Image 1: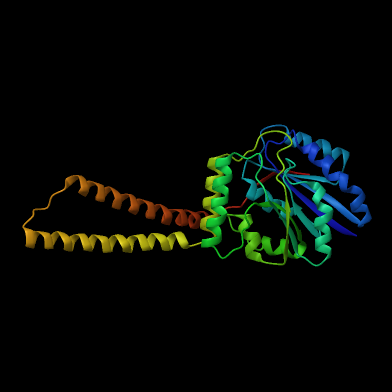
Image 2: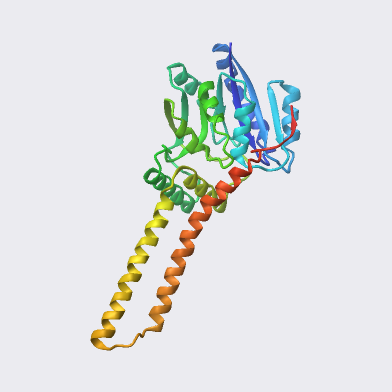
Length: 309
């Protein structure tokens, strides 16, 4: 008998915890047919509402429901890593509790693993229901990552992914503090089947991902799987050095030939401001990589557990 571990990160999701369990259990007949046991791992990421109480109610009703509760909010990346660590299944699937990852896809996904795939990943073919500006920047991010990174990161990719134990172990072998799981999935390789579906809106509640959080998350992805920004900063430095030498030669020649004194304070101020801005921008790029290194060498734990059932 095989075991399927369902990893479900939760942050202030008291309204959807029970609904997710109900939807998942609609596949129970399929699981029995496949002679498959199920364990459900709710990872409470420091919720401030009644998420923990709702999970405990489910545990009293069904012992297959487990919970790992963090001491504070460590973020979804830490929650997914904890779920993979605590899972025991031959197959492991990561799903959002808000039902944007339809449990009804699980039978098809399991079927692909039985065909020989190591993982089945999902991607949205539409972004219906999302603000247009957010959708635009999301598409731009994935296009940028394709150009600057060697790691495969698909446009519209979700964290909803079913994996074999071998692939899960490979991911757990990367205990880096600054995590970008979408990139890690691609980096470890293995044979992946992509499953497309129409976007599903949240069942209840509000998204915890605002534009600013998504922007910071995209920076984590860029710095985690590409060093092109550092190369860009170096090239900018070289170009501005060449520009400066050219302007120096131009000023000397103009003085010798035309006797024109150095003039143009407004243009000088603009050039200084531009050069200073580029320097600070490049310094910021270096700072981003340095900050990631700083957090890694501290060797702090990715998460801390307050309670576990």
